[in-house]
Length: 279
Image (cartoon, rainbow, N blue to C red; front, top):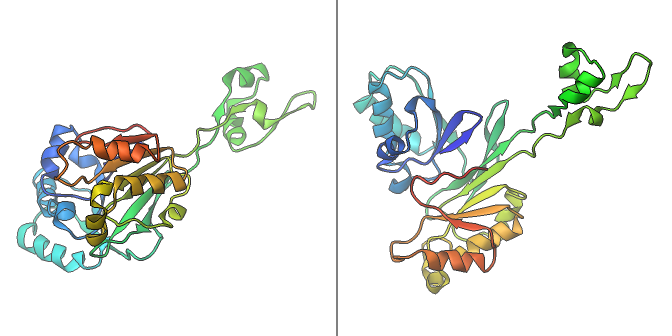
């Protein structure tokens, strides 16, 4: 789940998603948009069950689903069979996994597809927060007796002219806004040498790390990545933080993946179920 300014966005919906939502105390009603990266079961088998549950709970708000066009007819057949009276509208948005384009935008953020390379059409998603306005320095507003009616203009960049004609520069009246945050989700994919160009400067990168380098041949064969390759993407993208995930079950202890990644990119974390990361 990605939470931005009290809005919840879901990325992929594997089997068991509803149980995890309840364990995490996430309100179903707050989820308005679901982004499906590709049509492998561990990324989409939980979708129709969740849609049905939303209906039984009395949902009325639209639910927007973004996925490759092939899901559209299958989803509609499931809706016709199991959810013909759910009481709300499911809006399907076909996406082209080969393109790097904005598929969702509102006043606070945009979501862009990231073309990936897997055994089936697949893309990641880049969430970028839009810049916010600077913060007012209340002590300066009080000192210059600036009326409340001018606050919006000052936040928008205006200077202030005092009664004696002196111009007070805007930078003296505001604190800079926090830098916009961003989150890139890249799973499942083989290593892409120029992927970093799509996500340059990202705050936090989630990149699959199915294997360690001891299974590089398997990673290549099955279109997955090693932890070291994930770290190389983060390094090249000048990311601030790397999150590893999508581990092969052959590793009883994922520390080998963490150490391998940290040898390339120090600020790396292993993700686990119900983990919360604050950007």
